[in-house]
Length: 269
Image (cartoon, rainbow, N blue to C red; front, top):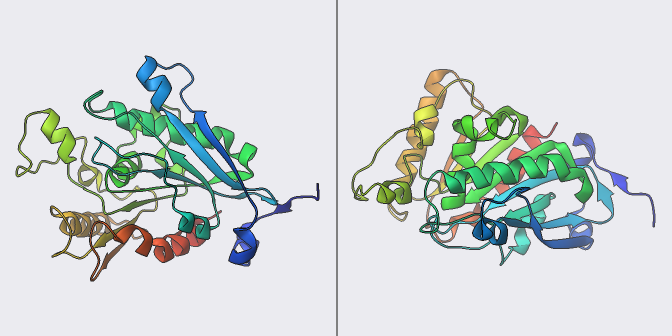
């Protein structure tokens, strides 16, 4: 086998996308929980790794699927994600009603920690980890970035990760968490499970992308705009926010890729 090409921040921009997407390996159904609490966690908490077989040191991208914390799957991996030039780790996590908050957040934190520990096995750099997701997966991304207690339980700090990219995220307390407490969806709250509650100066780099205000569900563009304004007001100018006109909750995910690629390039170490 030829010597693997080492990717650095300087060479990352020069990767030929056509060349890159031709050389992939896939490893599926990898458990990321060392000591599952029950059969459901053992069966569910797995991830699939997609990584280049001809280069090493690429950024690692942890991806959380959507589905309202009630559904969705890590399968059905989008081929366009390969265009981001990363080794990709598509994560499954426990869902309501089998579990309630904060179980799915704890699973997400455990998955990020596993990728951090094991990135080099998949030709990725443990010093260049990014986290993303759409909808419910975006919420998991944002709460890990903001409420440091979840990654702290895995001996990590949010700043140990290069950046977070929640796509069409609820920045208030997630509607499924509210429902678990018997709170109507029309009642919006901000507590320790709301990323908005942690809009402070010391947040790690954050990229927020939403669809258009009149086409999205709930108040997500407004949530994200408020989050961005609050972060900037606190003195943090690393956060980015983009509301994409003409797009809906169902199609903003793939439209966000150019913004995600620029963000990865900017914060790769």
